[in-house]
Length: 286
Image 1 (tube, one colour):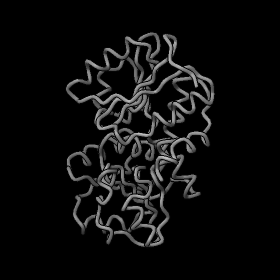
Image 2 (tube, helix red, strand yellow):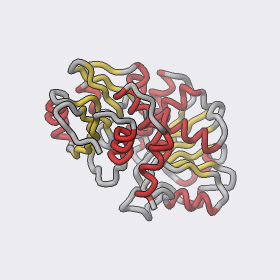
Image 3 (cartoon, one colour):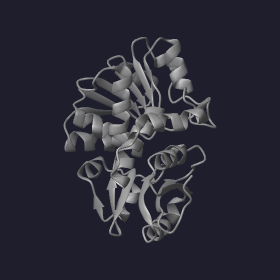
Image 4 (cartoon, one colour):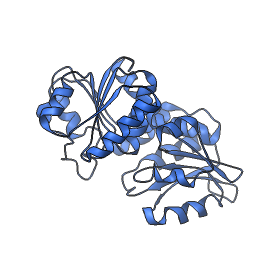
C-alpha cells in the first residue's frame, strides 16, 4: 500500500450527499494497481460554500476533480477553460487542473452510452428515447445521444420548464430531435409507445430510498429497454419491474465505471483497467 506524501496528487469529488459514492473505492484501487501516486477523496460541499471550497482546492496539490449532484452546472462559472462538448452540454462532471487553471469536461454521456450499447448490443443511432429528468446528468446523456444521432428524444421532468429548456437547447445546438412532454400518465404513455429505450437520469430509487419509483410501472411494456443511472442499489425498483416484464435492462454501474475511466485518463494520462474498476466496486453492491 502506498502512503500519501507531499508529492501525492489529489483528486477530489465535490457534491452532496456523498455517503453512497463508490468512486473513491474504484479510483484508489486503480491508482494502487497502476502504482500511481494519487489519492481520491470525497468532499461534501453545499451550494453556498462551493466557490470558497473550490478556490481553496485548486491552490492545493489537486490534479483534478469529479463533480456530482447538485454542482454540475454551477461549477462552470468557476472554470478557466471548458471542453467544447462540455460547453455544448452545459454541465461538467470532470475537471483537470493544469498550471493552476481548471478545465472542465463531461464524461457522463459517453460513459453511459458506452455501457448501454455494450449491454444492449446495439448502437443508439436512429433509436427513440424517453428520458426522465433534466438535471446535470440528463444534460450530459441527452446531448451526447443527440450527437450520436438518435431519431427522437422525449424529455420528461417534474418541473416541466426544465425539460422544455433542455429540449430547446438540444434542438438549437445539435439538431431537431428533442421534445419536452408533461409528466402526466396519458402523455407519458403515448410517448413511451413509440420508444425503444427508457432512461431514468434522476436519483429516484437511490439508496436509502430504494422503494421509490420514478414513474408508474404500468407504463412499462414488453420490449422496451429500461436503463437507470442509479447504481446503489444495483437493481433499482424500476429495473426490477422492467425485468419482471422481460424488458432488457441496463444498470447504473457501467456508467459509473466508464465515465470514471474517461476521467481517470484525463487526470493521469494512463489507460485505466476497466475490469479492475468493476471488480473494485461490485463487493459494495451485494
